[in-house]
Image (tube, rainbow, N blue to C red; front, side, top):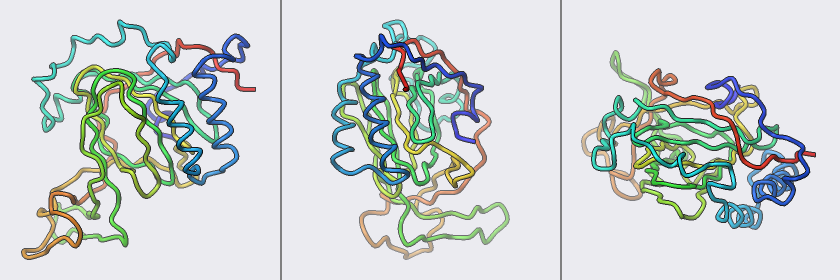
Amino acid sequence: MCLHRRLFNMTKKTSSSSSSSSSSIQALYDLCKRTFTSSGNLPPSSKATQNLCSLLDTIGPADVGLRDENQEDDRGHGLLGLNLFNRVDRWAQPITYVDIHEGDSFTMCVFCFPTSSVIPLHDHPGMTVFSKVLYGSLHVKAYDWVEPALVQKGKQAGHPTVRLAKLAVDKVLTAPCSTSVLYPKSGGNLHCFTAVTPCAVLDILAPPYLEAAGRKCTYYHDYPYSTFSADGDEVQNGKEEDYAWLAEINTPDDLYMRSGTYTGPAIQTE
C-alpha cells in the first residue's frame, strides 16, 4: 500500500468536468500522462524532465485551490523558534495531505505544512519525484546511497544495522523557486522535509508507492559518520560531514497527518 493510502482514507477528488481543460493543473496532468504512461517505470528522459520542470515552475498556490488563508498559520513556533533537532516540537502540528490524482503511473498531491512540522527521512525506491514549493520556506535534507553498498551490522545489543549514504541536499527552499527532482539513485532519493514557515509542496511521484511492486516507503534515522566508523577510517570522496549512516526505523508514531479536500480546478482524466 502506498505511503499516501497508508496515512489516510482518501477519496478521489478528480472529475471529468470539461471546464478544466484549459487550467494549468490540467496541462500538468496531461503532460504527466504523456510522460509517464509511455516511459513505464523508467525515469523520464532529460528532455521530458526539463519540460515537466518548466511547467511546474509556472504553477502557483491558486492553481491547486490554495487561498491566502491557507498560507497563514499561528500554531507553529515561528522562524526564530524552529529547532531542527527537537523532533517532538517539529511533529506537534498536523500536515495536511491533498490528493489531486492517483493512478498506476503517477500521483499528484499537495502537502501543506504548519511551521516546524516534519515529514521524516524516507525513501522513494525506483521512483522519480518532482517537488515544487508553492509558498513559504522548506528545509530539505536528502541523501543517496553510497554504491556499492557499505553496511555495518550491529555488533552489540541495541546497535542497529546501518548503511552508508552521502548527503545530496541540505538547504532551505523558499518560494518562488525552481522545481526539485530526485531520481531512483541520485538527486537525494531519501529526504526529510521540515517547514521553516507555513508552506506547501506540490509533488509528482512516478511511479507511485506500491509495496507489491517493491516500492515500499521506508523510514530512516541518520547517524553522523563517526558514530559507526572505526578510529582512523577516512571517507574516500568528500568530507566526513558529507556522509551519514542510515538505520531503518518503523513508521514514526508522531507523524501527524490529516487528509484535505482538493478545491482546485477539476481534472479531466479521459
